[in-house]
Length: 259
Image (cartoon, rainbow, N blue to C red; front, side):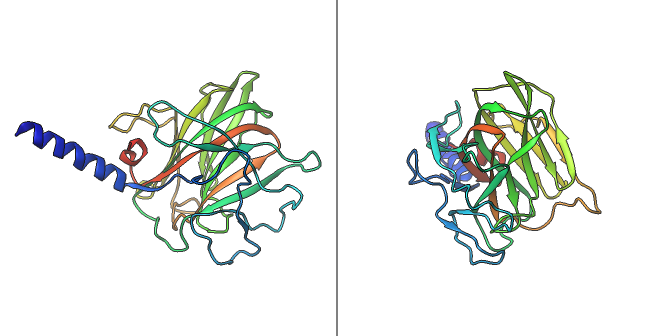
């Protein structure tokens, strides 16, 4: 009897955790070497292409840059998301700067309260600048732009990097050292009630949520976390080289660690 109760309890926990995973397997159907983008947003209010990677709308996009390409598989012990990644940094020689791609998840305010978590893997072989540069963000616009919370990376030395985040104009950076050429698990957390954005770097995947590495705390004036998240933004940059992928969008820490 006790064993049956335990099995049922475990099953209920798994179902509950999985229900808190809002989006996963964002590169399903891709193989290594495929173009990431399936379409282009030519205007800010273009109809949504739900659950699809697209070229973000921007009047400043260099059309010669082309779509990012999918790359090698990444993995992290204990983290369930598998599959190919997105290559970052492989822009044509004549293209400088950066280019945005977006994965559109909603055209409404479906994700605008409580907590939201974006977890993903990143492996960098080169980071050119000691100044923090963003490469992943969450946006309240399904075509991209007006970024709410970003993940930054910067160079410490030839073998080490550091990460940071922000909430609009409030920045929070960590000076903890992390290795290049190593796959890192990054978890970006939005807490609407506390009005803050947190970043976890290589956190322990335990049932209890660990302490974040950095927290960007907003205010009631110009840096308030409001509005729904409608897209995940990827910024391909000429000063970074590596791979990013294995995304999961969840409403709780249980969703992050769900199997």
